[in-house]
Length: 82
Image (cartoon, rainbow, N blue to C red):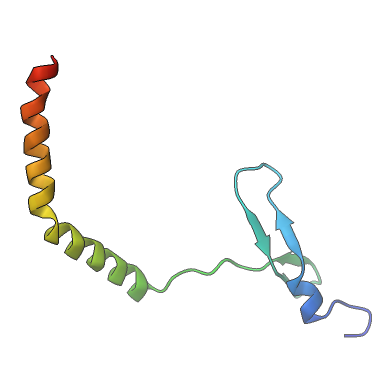
């Protein structure tokens, strides 16, 4: 663009969190009123979140015997330390 920022220049902008509570954001967009703002963060699709939760459930179900036996062993050890 003449006199403005190109797409490659916008992608080189790095935004820092002034409060120090997070990381940095790269990339920018130009609003309809000409203001430069950080590019929106990607949000996972609902299918991805559901697949992740199902995978965690399958892994927990598969390891349930190990978890239960570990908890039983811990309960048996507790009276020894009191």
